[in-house]
Image 1 (cartoon, helix red, strand yellow):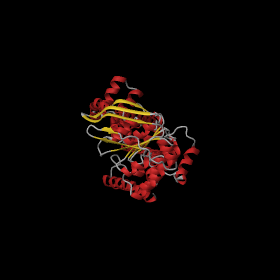
Image 2 (cartoon, helix red, strand yellow):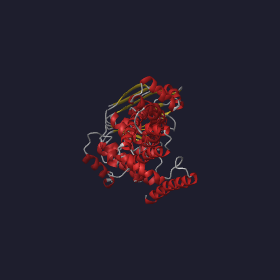
Image 3 (cartoon, chains in turn purple, orange):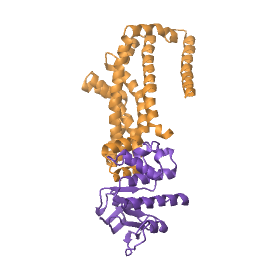
Image 4 (cartoon, chains in turn blue, yellow):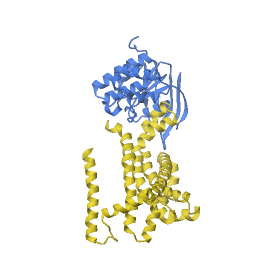
Length: 208
Length: 249
């Protein structure tokens, strides 16, 4: 169970978030949509524990994975090391298996800079899923991708979520993306922003 | 690569050529001896063990000051580049030490600590630290916040974070500080030896300066330049290439 309650979050004197509550059941997939600048990324960072300067409480599992807008890889370490360094104790074989799963088994020894952007994003996805996270956070993961690549990444993300079954918190601009990946869609809007939650919608899951 | 080496050799050769021309024009070996007239006394100094002994003394001081100044400078620079409060408090100190003439620090260290090895090395180290701090702080300011967030989400250990996330980003700045550092440090070490040590290249230069022996001054100075060129080519450049490997791969 993941419980988020942000009473107040401000940058300088400007209040960004007020009284935002969000609960996620294990394996539940929630998308947060809303206008840009509303504080969606800020909310994600608070949930992930990256931003700790806020008033409120977050109850989160220990094992979290984050997919950023950019691949955010260690460019000076090999593709394989990007998986093992972020998951101490992970057997190398498991990391290789995950690379095989995303179609990059022959790139394990390469530096991320030698890969195409699409391949780098697949490494980022592999890194997120290899630790079998209980909570997966995605911050506009498909923004700035051309439609074909975005579709490819989304399909891969969808099937990996179906395999690992983490709780998912996704921020996106694209309504279609939210509907495809999430069970429930919330809107973050207003200034300071609050969360508007519709009644739980049950959507057919891929593969079930 | 070989073209690079050829350019280097040619460039060094032209310095030598300039020296030959100047020595011919001066026509006075007590002011500027021709390069080849140095070879015989050089051989004598090496055979007697005099040159290797003083060279070694200076090299040890350079190594100590280099290691101390780099470690302190990297630690302080990283701290100041990532922590604004620390930066605010330490920046005035940095400006003071940057503008303090090397000579003043050296004299004060000798006066306060005594005419000994500790004072010599501390004086050189203190002279170099502000320089390293300035360069490394620049690097620490440009650390990628997204990578820090990533390291935090995936709960990387502080040591692993330092080694795999922070230091690789600082590496180009550390390399720049190191290469500039060795050059500055050995110049200051010579002054320190000149003023208050009874061995080392600086001491010998002081001695031959009082005897007005240009030939011996040149022999001692140039032999150390050669050693530093070797250190740069054999240690610093390969290390820099290694940490930059991911950029060119």
